[in-house]
Length: 237
Image (cartoon, rainbow, N blue to C red; front, side, top):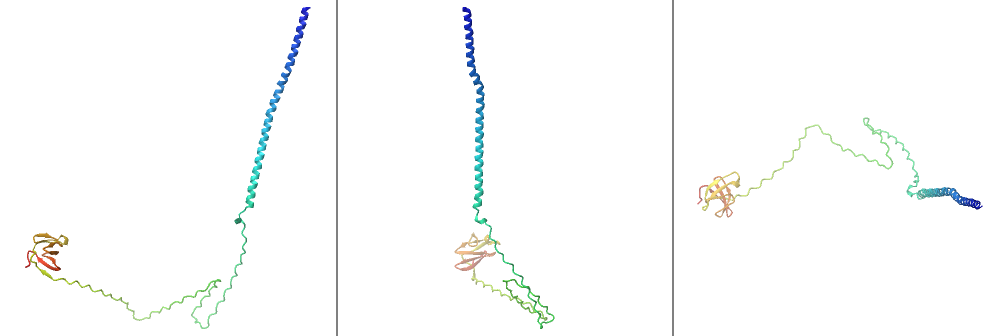
């Protein structure tokens, strides 16, 4: 009997354990099935929210651009510069009618047959005055006859040359000056003479006298405003 009771007890324990395990598995199975549904719904919400935000942003951008364009178009139309206003039409005056040509004047009866009448002048425009023609000077025609002699220009008298200053009298000889040699050259600054044993040139001073000019055979000197000459190899007494 005890064995039967033990077997019954084991069977009941097995049943109770099976029931408990069945009760524990049911919520786990439900959770496993519900979890994917929750995970799938969560991304759809975020995507729909993002799409809604994008649509709102695009709509706001289009609205702002449309308002700005409307303002830009309204400002130039309302604030147009005064200088661009169309100028008032200026009435043009009609062109003056052409004046009829003046009739040609009839030739005078007393005019010679050989004279040619002057052509009629066209009428002058309004506001212009006729300038009288300058009368041509009558040039006398040359008469045949003896040819006129060309007029010779008057000779200009040349002024008389100024009188040369009167040369002072030249005295020959001087007792204290002796000329013993002369070296004459064409150029005066190269001429030399030996006076009282000294070789001198023109302009030198010898015995109180100044050498004025050295000639080929004599020397001209000046002393106290008087000119005198001393011959070569001689002494004036």
